[in-house]
Length: 72
Image (cartoon, rainbow, N blue to C red; front, side, top):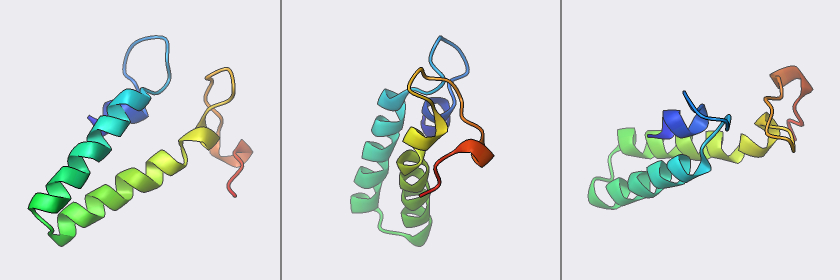
């Protein structure tokens, strides 16, 4: 779910924030039910990538290459 939200395979939008939010919600729920290191790592990775989402796309929704992104 997160991967499809991070980089949509079809449609006009480059990303689908609704899917990434849902994947993170499910990851947090799983963390409550099964607080294992693998679950923590997966949730942390999703949160890291989600935090970078605004830098990956321009205001017009186009992909911004890594060397052109504001990495602060």
